Image (cartoon, rainbow, N blue to C red):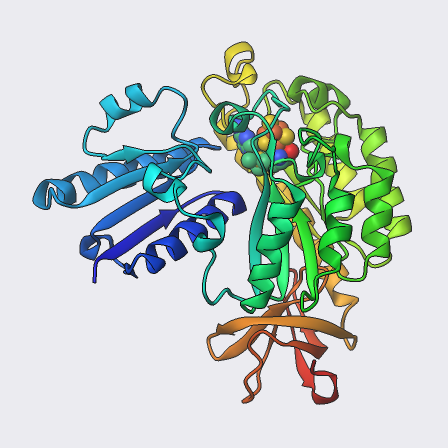
Length: 419
Ligand code: SAM
Ligand code: SF4
């Protein structure tokens, strides 16, 4: 049996694409292998959102050179954000790679197959479904629109039949993906929006939970918030990257909203969706970010108290507006210092938020086992562990929380609560 190996780095979108690719290989009779050395086909699904990610991709590509030299019959393909529009140029840089294909563009032999053929035969309880590719926003620091092109939404009917099929094959929870998921649909003939799609998917029998990420504050509508509040399967979890707590930095980032707008939006979300978990992304050390501007970010995060904060140090990406026009003038050590400060703040906040769940009972979808413990997530997306000898894979169970930390919860199963 021929063997395939997929190496993935980057966002959920990349992970979802790799999963699709993996199942397609399996259907063609390939078998997954855990080591690149044994593979007949290797696909690198790349990310260049930060310099560190790009460096890892390049290192991996260089490491594979000797493997290809030893075994010229090996097929090596690269996808993801490294693959820009100038494929001829990257081909020159990496002559040992056989194929480059753009994210979402399966290579020719993959494209011919029906999309549903690429669905896994036995999906895990929780699956990702991309609904919109690309991004139209051109935030000044971000390389995504250059690498993934403009926004392209998949039709409602196509997504609905895919989700129905995944549920039929065993999936219980679906996370809808897009770089800018809440702008879904504006490019389709009937202009459905994300709320319309959620209403449609909420009707699917056997589906227990729906989520979506990542939302842009400028596209988060009152209709969407009300729909999330109203629909029973749509979980109380919103990912809403703020990026900075300073209006001047937000403007330089070209984020097209203000701190005041963002604050109002989170107030509306929390007012309408009881128990909602909010997460956000923040960049520290953006060009010219002063100590006061950083302090504004710190204050905003202290005030809004997110469940999760993903913090990154600014990394100039060649070709972006910020890299062309703004000097990367915050020293690396200062960026690291600011990053650590935010991480420490958030650790304390998450510890306090999670501690409120002590002695409470939460619904958990069991996704697997880790180090002998069952693991799953609450509707709000919190990681929960529990020990029990039964088989709970893919089940919704009630867990009484006995221990909490900033990152996860631990508890005991309440046997009367199994669905
Ligand atoms: N579309 C989403 C949004 O509007 O925030 C997120 C997409 S982006 C690929 C994921 C996160 O990476 C961003 O929220 C941002 O915090 C971070 N990021 C993107 N470009 C970056 C850069 N040049 N330097 C540091 N972090 C960056
Ligand atoms: Fe990048 Fe901004 Fe688009 Fe997010 S919204 S993918 S940060 S350009």
